[in-house]
Amino acid sequence: MLDSVQTTERVGEILLAHKGMEGALLPILHAIQEEFGHVPQEALPIIARDLNLSRAEVHGVMSFYHDFREAPAGQHVLKLCRAEACKAVGADALATHARGALGIDWHETTKDGKVTLEPVFCLGLCACGPAALVDGKLVGRVDAAKLDRLVGELK
Ligand code: FES
Image (tube, rainbow, N blue to C red; front, side, top):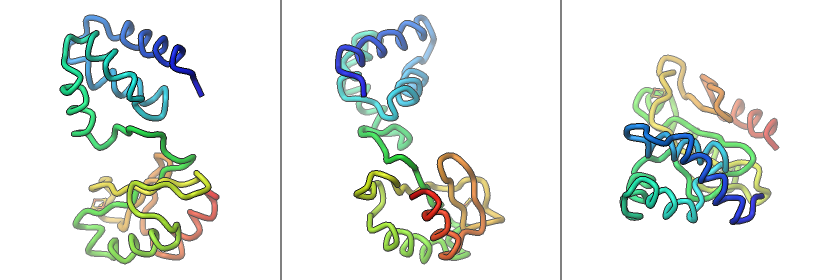
């Protein structure tokens, strides 16, 4: 875990690496999230100053795009598709099962810090739903038993 001086320094380096880039805000936010696992609050005024934006503008962009986190995720991130094709093959029941099995709701992390559960709206795996993304890896045809297995492997 970096302290706030190290965080500020690292954010400064990321800003420098994007100097002069047109429309740099999104790439900067991606790079910061890549580095820290989330976008630390203290990074926002530094980004705003560097790009000559208001802090509210930076915050607005961050909260509009669901991929940016304000707080660190758990060790693993399990995303379940909530979109139409997956719904047609049982995504709702799977989601209820997942929330029960993990004991958490959407956007929450299990108490042991292992798994964060997030909804996602289509993963392009519509013919093999219900679809999931486990730490960035696509998994198709997820039923309750498969989900239990996946979660068991993560714990
Ligand atoms: S609807 Fe679930 S992957 Fe497309």
